[in-house]
Image 1: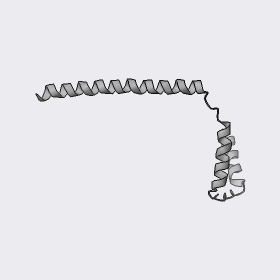
Image 2: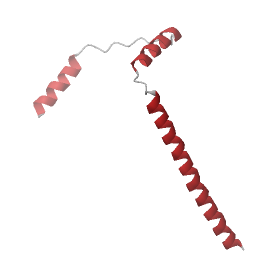
Image 3: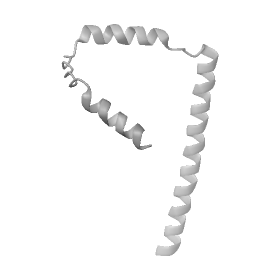
Image 4: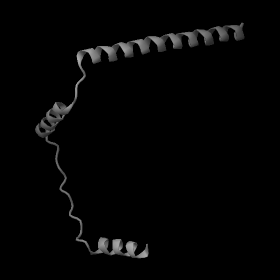
Length: 84
């Protein structure tokens, strides 16, 4: 184990000093080119999948609205009982 550590340390010390990377400026044209090519790689959902996902989200939102409404009504009723 000691030999391995020693070899790693020696290699790290004997290496050339790391070159500083040149800071790259923001280039809007290159950014949009890269964005366009990345968007080509995306696997887009079919219309049927998209409709199913949308319906699932809407159903979940309705369910959560009902749950929050019931909890709010329950706490409101409890508060009325306590204060009256």
